[in-house]
Amino acid sequence: MPCADNDALRCTALRVASAVGLPLQDSDVTAVRFLVPRSLARREDVPIPILVTLRSRDLVLKLLSAKKAKGRLLSSDLQSSSATGNRVTSIFINEALPGEFYRLLVSAKTEARKFNYKYIWHKEGIVFLRKSDGARVERIHTITELRKLVRRLQSGTTASTQPGALDEFQNSQSSSNSSASTLIPSGSGSC
Image (cartoon, rainbow, N blue to C red; front, side, top):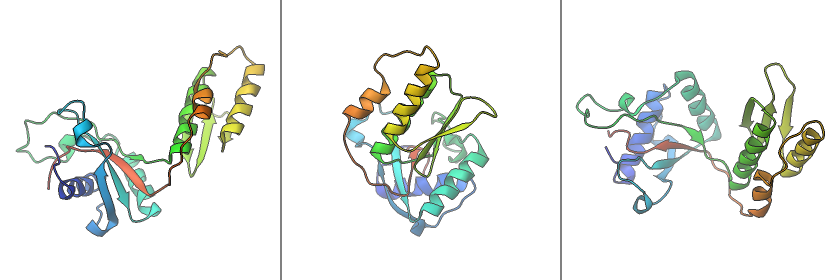
């Protein structure tokens, strides 16, 4: 069921939070909008992600933790039994990251995969990499630290030296402010 207005988007955000076991109050949601304009949607049947801004970072962390504990969340978890005509889709909840940090994370993932790192994640503005279970955790704060790690890994292995994510990261320049936000797909039911 597509969300046509801000009230429907807010309602969808509140239903998603309830579905993962963290009922939010209307006042906990400070802003909600489509991530891209609906007019730019490629296909009508594909839900457009929505950006939800919560009133505190603590609520964002609680929501992410509740989603992790819940496991897979489907659009059918939000819809009433009368909405059987809708296609069932997965619902993802992700933290909205500032642009520069997002590019660092993507670059780190790209480079780490070249060296067969098994685990790549982020927390509180730091990228973490772990090659295997029980291996040392590498912490990356900046693109400079990522370059140093890649050089160190290249000196000890025969990894690809083709231009990659580091070059793309260096060439992209934009800034974005951080906020307490999460992303969830729209079209996941109505109030």
